Length: 487
Ligand code: UN1
Image (cartoon, rainbow, N blue to C red):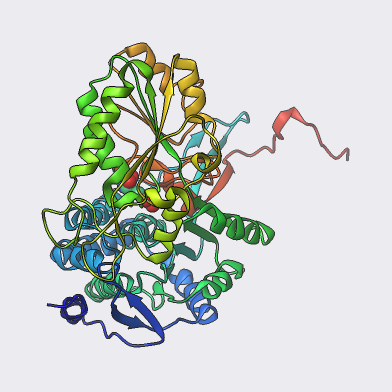
């Protein structure tokens, strides 16, 4: 069956009608696979504000019930939704299933969280006083997501936003509008089963850049959670700051792995293959820089060259395939700009851009090595002493993820210490990509500083209120200040 035919079958299962002026193309063969209609930012914001008035008063565990139902719908539709991710984003089916699993996982997490939105009780310095901290719903949350995780990133944000009492507006990538429509169909099913959620609680606003810009600028949007390039973050951040809105930015990465002399090199090689070449190098956590000790470099690079030469590149629907296509021609051009005639295009499916992952020995960390090229290019840098390795890890503008392969406890601990990796994620004996939802996800510097997903990331979706309560009959002031009227 044609790619478009497969998409049509799946959209039918979801009850999604493919129509409108926005065109979706499959990276598998470049063919048009469906259409979607642009949304209206103003109407969406107005509806979200109305939904907020009611949703914020619904008890959090009851809000969790909606997310629990969504998790159920996702379980039932897991294979269909994953297939659509493969058809529209070009990921291999294993990774697409993983992406939908990530949505299910965050739903489970958020359901538990809906009974754990804890505030502190604080000792007051005044007699007969009590202090405490509460977390209240924040307001409409705008989720801007990228093509490479067309469904999971929305789920990380929305599952938390919903249990925290906020309506959600979703502006997906213009490259993956159909995945978004399918997810919305599942949301509608969950909402129907839930019963009495307000209209406009979860909205999808499709469109090009200007639709996103209008949403970002809208005063009614309390939090903008944006995943994408650093360039996008540079445009979004100041706009939101200007109106004193909140942002949660998860931008570009330039993730490294340090391989030390004591490392299990075979384990490292397998981790590198997945981290550098998996998802065709199109994860924000993709491994882009390999910082390897000179004593093990030759052997490891040769092993990697063999693996990269053998890895099966092709149609992501084929279960044997490990590397699918790049998202589009622009991505291929970006990779060609770096590699020139060293780029190896693979003749897999006509109309798609399939490439062999590349290994480049970089004599110094400069030029393109400092940039995030969203394609499978692995730069190799050699080091002599450990301080130099840490310095290389940190000497790039981005700060998302990092990892070390070592069996030396001192090196591992130093890497994770305050004087070690400066990234939001620092792993030992696993690669920099493929994080679980339980941890906070995000990074420093040009990565934007936001944290999504697990741990206490939920706080970003709520407003904090400090309360002081006097249950006595006097009015003592803090800091012992006396302010008595002499009568
Ligand atoms: C992204 O590429 O935007 O850690 C997110 C990972 C995935 C998420 C990546 N769980 O690689």
